[in-house]
Image (cartoon, rainbow, N blue to C red; front, side, top):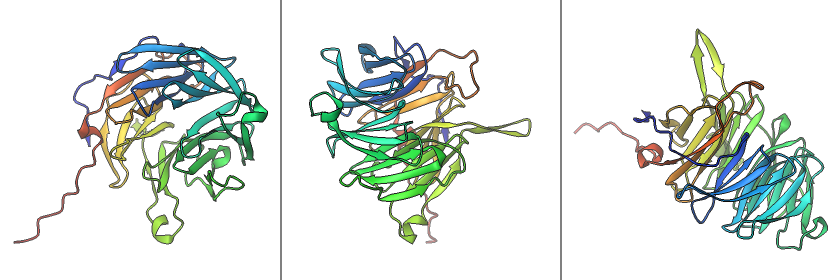
Amino acid sequence: MTSVPSPAPGRELSNPPSDGISNIRFSNHTDHLLVSSWDKSVRLYDASANALRGEFFHGGPVLDCCFHDDSSGFSASADNTVRRLLFSSNKEDILGRHDAPVRCIEYSYAAGQLITGSWDKTLKCWDPRGASGQDRTLVGTYPQPERVYSLSLVGNRLVVATAGRHVNVYDLRNMSQPEQRRESSLKYQTRCVRCYPNGTGYALSSVEGRVAMEFFDLSEASQAKKYAFKCHRKTEAGRDIVYPVNAIAFHPVYGTFATGGCDGYVNVWDGNNKKRLYQYSKYPTSIAALSFSRDGRLLAVASSYTYEEGDKPHEPDAIYVRSVNEIEVKPKPKVYPNPLA
């Protein structure tokens, strides 16, 4: 495991949100970065140029956001609305609503649909190509066992993590019922779920400093590969201090992944070899969200207090964009002992 030699956290973006950052996402096409915040805004940055390119304000805190294409995106708000944002014209429209705050939003390129998860214990699929208005854009509503906390997509697979440690796995081509109904293998509340880029499974993190590595294939051989590990914790005066793991982001080229915790650290892991590859120097406060750029050259880090210890004085909310060095994210080849000559 290598530690970062310099304390540089990356370049800080100017004009950050004025309250907690709920998510940050790089575009699939450029170095544009979409940021949602509790200050009721969604901001669009050009991360390479360090420039704010657009800003949208909602009726309540914005809990998630995602890109549609490079000129538009979507947002999930605590005012129960699902919105489409048009960056070029700075216009927005309401695609539809949930009955409670909308916690997660994902756009599926495979299905051409938008998927939202809410604290109203439902998942909704929308067709953004329909004219505005809920009746014309809503494709279906799918009840969940509990409030939706995190969503992730890979190809036609959708993983839904809810309160009560439930995990539902869907095939987007047949949403009538989950393909698999699972329970988290971690004992505590789920914070984040992210699918492996190769489509074979997902990583899931909890509030209790752990990450579980899971596989979709239910065969005994595949299930034997699953494991969980401890992270984002420290020992102080003989006591274990354990932090929530808020964020997981997979590297698009190497399939290694970064985790961000309330301890202010970002760690990079090689899940296949069960090794920590890197730890970046500590950020000013909790890591609320992480995103790699499409080519894996940049890592955006949201350093933003997540109120895990209640209301208290804290460092200002900030977004850092760091250049990723191959040594930080590339799996190290296994070293085998030399056979005797």
